[in-house]
Image (cartoon, rainbow, N blue to C red; front, side, top):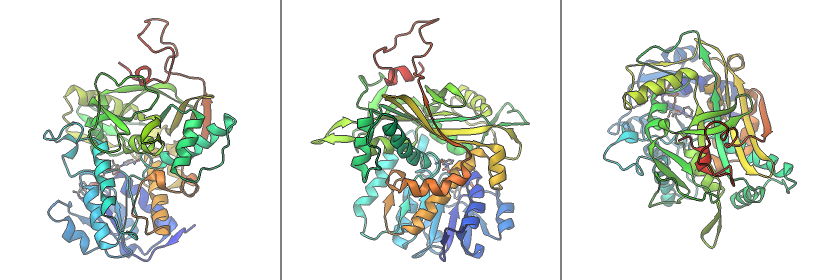
Length: 469
Ligand code: NAD
């Protein structure tokens, strides 16, 4: 089904796993002439896919010096810039689209190359919190009818913000509360407070495996290796809940912005946390920084006369595919110097699922996970050029593009501010089984038996209990 007839031009920056994976969905669900699509990328990957669909393919990296001239020639009012690159500043592209009157979508707030690990910047300024504050700072100069720029709308960040709302309504109903859909941000925050949600994990377990094991000196993953290593080397970050009794010893607050999040003085790829998904059960995930940890915590904050009276702790808990775990182990051992070889797994994947959802915990019913359990086999049967991980992202990109086309004058928008039911309806055909499951699991389970630990028995949902020391 075509959801929108788009007669503008479409420029796609970056054509890696997500760019290639989203193209069949765009051409299937948006009526657009392929001759109006231009890809600008920094390597030859995907050239064959561009040829398959009859798209213009330019292999010449954008730089700080030339992006304005090169993109201005391709973008005007009613056109669309889809940013699926690494190493190109999202903030620069949003500003340019605003000047040109073009719609915009990305899946991550990227800095220019090197921004994540720039030693001249403090950890606070290398954080996603700082990138988000800079992006939202652009709203200050906004006009009333600015073109829509939907930022961070992949799977996570992106789709998971919509899962949170669906899950909140389910938890509220199970707790016997009024589960009518709230009308605004304050209503959602109040619902989370009344339901007693203390913690929100973006809990993901990727079990995809290939017929080729990881080799020494090789980083293997199911999506961008540069993207994953970049964010994994940023400080671990988490939305900081009002129920937390003490800041971690290595936890720091930022001295600017909305104050919804803290960071730890260590890279996220070295910090594990305890979490749970329905198929995997309990596991350790990495506390990788992500924009949704900060935006969801901010969105669900309740204030009274300016003072925070409620906020959930919110963070990512990511178990990448097993080959990525051994790749990370090797990377950490080399003090975060990247391996010489990268392999983004696609056709060689033989089995596995990406179980990606949100775990809302600490309320009267324990914990509740809601999300997608997409297998690689089902992903392949639904769309070419995808694995299970990429299809969860590309379905969300497609749905965000359609929403932006349907709502073209909203200015800069975060996923939390978008109609969640419209997005879930659009994504649903591509997510495989979408399930909700309650559990009585807590991060204290089984901790006393062999090595009694210094844990907080009164409140299982303290970050101190969740963090793996
Ligand atoms: P990838 O590494 O497979 O591809 C990145 C692409 O960017 C490549 O085509 C590369 O040539 C291009 N590129 C690099 N430098 C460029 C430059 N200077 N100018 C133009 N193009 C340039 O990455 P991917 O897996 O496709 O991910 C793309 C982006 O999406 C990353 O920012 C990643 O973090 C993000 N992402 C978000 C989610 C989510 O759920 N929100 C999930 C996966 C990926």
